[in-house]
Image (cartoon, rainbow, N blue to C red; front, top):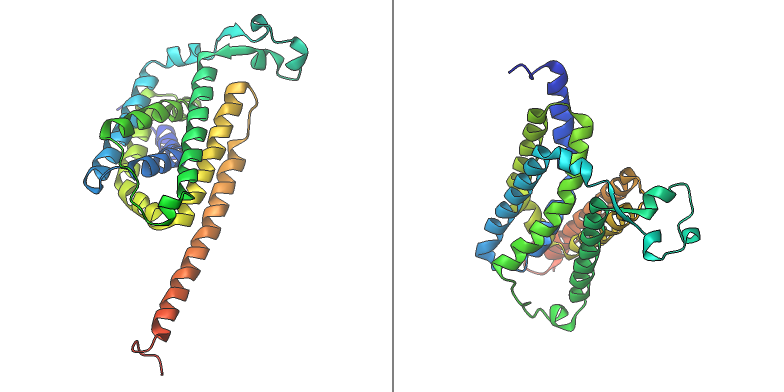
Length: 264
């Protein structure tokens, strides 16, 4: 246990907390896609999806040299006939060069945007408004969607781990702790999101925002993630206050009904 020092213990705590924060978008996506499964399969799919995320992160950590190679440009946009003046700016080389990491972020971001837009559209469909039960997805298709996004989210997670800790064992331990926490609360979060349509709409909106951020990252335009997470926390705090007010209003209305203790 030579690696276990006060410095590494501190890195483990900080990295675990950061991995939990970075995993929020992953668990929200899993909560939404598993909602299409039959009730008896949802919990199983969530656990398998998060275990896939764990395996993906550990695998990427073990091949971190390959991750570094993913950032090397495979081709340039100018070589495809795009005029240089379209790409001029402070980060010309970064925008011009397209790496494997850029392609993964672009594809993953577009997939996340498309999936979220489709889900939002279905929330407004006449069938959904009438309470008609939506078509259930297959277990395999849900796991495939989770695996695709796990690959994208794992890149951010692994890059953050490498930037904060020096020892591989500390990184793996932090990721295991974070995923363990997500597995522990996955069902509760999913149920809460499903029971509150406005919260689900907010979650889908943030998935679109995260998708846009991934596309921007893949295009070479960096967005400070702190602003995105601050907006998420602020909006969630406002929505929780709205939910609390609705619960109190419904309780008061129920007490006001004749026969429930209210004066006639």
